[in-house]
Image (tube, rainbow, N blue to C red; front, side, top):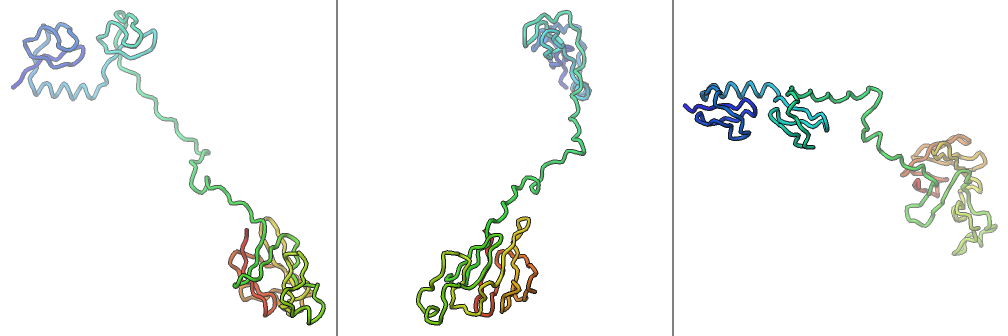
Length: 228
């Protein structure tokens, strides 16, 4: 069984015949020789207890308890007594009022839509609507001959429906925006119905519009909504 001299200063295990510690050169001639089993017990005890240190009065740095000069600033530590290191401060508790950011909290809100675009399935009809828009049939073509022309003589307004959709009234429906939500209103003067997703609207009452909704202005004009 191996036998050791355990240095009282640095804890190094030295051969039993050594007069000085091989690590820190402290004299160990009077140190009792320990066996392997005794060494294990000492190591376990040392592991359970924090090693003593010398705290430099100049820079507050921690040094080995056998140190004569500070490893950090070189100050004289010969008169400084060794002591167990101060326990590490426990992490501060997170105040209950402070919430850890979540994916929901950090998500950037999408901007409110600025316009409602209504398009036919074939793309030939496209109406761009904002708050206060009145959707209706072109009022420039006054007779059948003008209506049958290849190009409708419409104004530059982009909320006008081609006059070939003669079942759409001149003032058929209105668009209202409240708190960023778009609504369609079937106007009282419209002769034919306004239908959203298969449900006929009561004239004068508003109905919210979402992207993908199907809106029919009379039986001849079917458009699809997109919020942009």
